[in-house]
Image: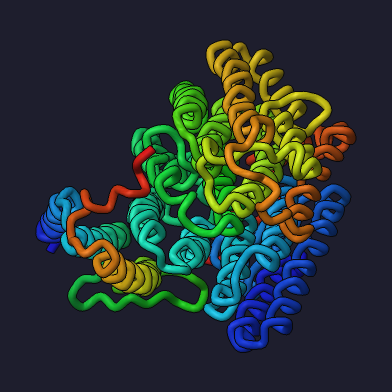
Length: 116
Length: 505
């Protein structure tokens, strides 16, 4: 698990960067999706991490009991998932409308606002 | 303990949900928006006074003690930014009444404006790093809606670039939050500041600080990260561009001030030479970009980038003096920039185009518009008696005092170039003879003129009564740079670690 997690995060980021550098809007969207997953896993690796047989519980006084793990990173990830879900849904709708208006999936065709 | 800090947040939430409900009842929705923003303005003006009289105001959400719960903090910098932001939003709403067609009002324009102000206010006041991320997302999502509302091809193209590049900044911010939690084990800004003093490997904090510089820098549009701004800002209606120019990049600049000036001061001192280099490069590239443009709003958009260089210069000086000057300048430029967008937008509305070659002859036909434009550009360029003079003077004084000659020199040069680029608009739009028959064009309505005129008058008043503003920002800069005082206000006299240890025992 502790070896697999960095590999998973690294491959998610690598795949995301690859897709983001493509010219297609759909691949751009997929790249952003992968990127947000990669970041969520990165945050996950910052806490003690969930391990088998270790529940994410803290005592009422804020301490982490022996045999439990810090639940805050899970809470952070949950917030981040919800936010990135909302924004990615918005981008998908926007990409669809842009695709309708420009009649192309190629980002290089969307340059009318860049010209002098 | 001052729980009134949640008042503006809650009132905006209520206002936004009511305007969604009454979106079809045009006048009712307008009334709710004006009432909601007006309340916010009155509250933040009172907050200016309260902070000056009683120092920092701190609220703990749900009564949780500081390092555990979410904290809201208001100091001088917060109060100034809140007051300016609500003033600009009020003017934008008034300008929207005159300039937008009914379709916008029916399709939730006002709720989005209120949510934008909500996100901005939250970002100004929060004392928790992850909470700052959430407020950023609130304001970004509102701005995504505003920039694409209308759905023309240009808006969709510009909006896509705006959304994607801003999302990259947000993701970098999220990575930074995660790493900070992994390294220091807390997200409360005061607690981070306290634990950073005793951290084992300072190198990793420098790396994290660079990630934050990237994240906030891409929101603030500093040099290598500003490309989303000129490609998207001229596409939505003028009112939207104006409020974006006043609020969005400045939230990025304010967050840089808060996170680097208060929380990561050691890193700020490490990175200061780099930040200053970014600052003068941003000033120059922005103003040169503006010179090449021939469209009113595009010229103004590039000037946003250039002015952000000045705000970043205040940060890069890494002292309370520099931060105070930067705050003064940022508050001034928010007001003037929005005013120029209003006036330029009014001219654009008369001619039906923003291409300055096709405009002309407005000085004779609309003398009031021309006069306020002229006052606005000399304020932006930094000539007395407008507020811009004192903003730039404070920055240059701070730069000279600290021996930062290069950035000070470039800042002076950029002031001259700004005047040159603004006079181009003046010559083309107002002074030169029009090619077409001007008398057939529509007159500018008072609703289009007044918001910009009022903001220019505010800028003039701030210039004439500059001593008040300078005194206030000097105190605010000291508060912003006073890390120990910040920790004590948030967590009590013994600091956050004492509260944390007591809770654990």
